Length: 206
Image 1: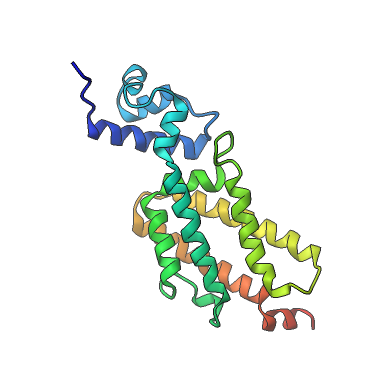
Image 2: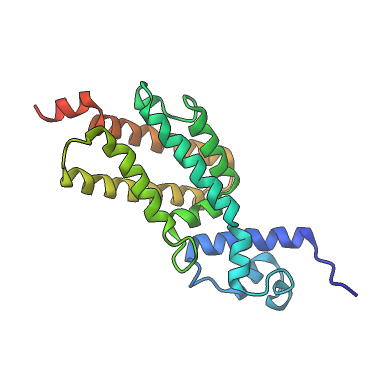
């Protein structure tokens, strides 16, 4: 007789796997710990995923990772508009709101992609996100070879991913995630506007 898999248990396994991969990373995560958190046994878990990599790919499917990059790029494109950067929040930008909704709906997967995908097919994605954010920011200074600014931006955007990942690991409820991201964006957008807009640049040179 064919094995009948229970969707409720599958959901618990994926929830536990997401939490474990997001917190400990792929290499350190153990199937026995995931099974225990899901309220089942390791032997039963293998009915849903034949090994750790298969379970990881159920937790962070390739189409989800690709969708996140598309939403991130759409959000970054908003900074090229003739609008104050401090308005590029979930309240002021459809692209920012769409990205934030995705984060709240896939919090563990996004946390993994941002800061804990080492040893997986997504290992290079964190660096790719940092490079893309840097490239967008440095477009305003295409004629200026400023290695110090590039270094500062790399540190800022690395910290951005770590902060968002920490928020997504800490909070479960969408409203809590949105509130924490609202605080972070308020701080970050004001700082980037002061650092990278023409007005901020001229002020900093005085």
